[in-house]
Length: 73
Image (cartoon, rainbow, N blue to C red; front, side, top):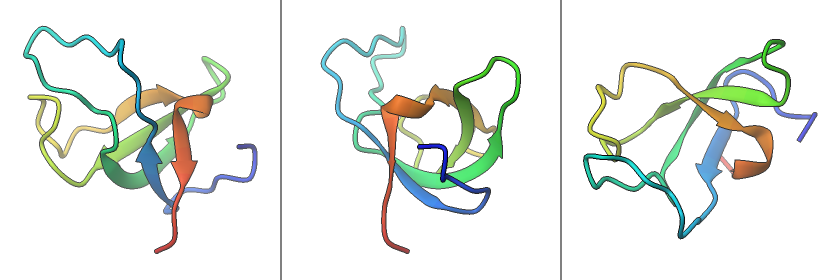
């Protein structure tokens, strides 16, 4: 995943153990890479396309690099 760049389209990989108190699930959500984090290393911020977390979708959320995959534009 080191080849991800800001602006790349990504999809959050499916996980059965996601837990958000709101009951929303980010699995299979799509979005755009907002920032590649240096600290903590191995994380990327994503602006999700849809409200799948109960958090304002204008707020980028951090995911581990291995939890996302790049998709075609």
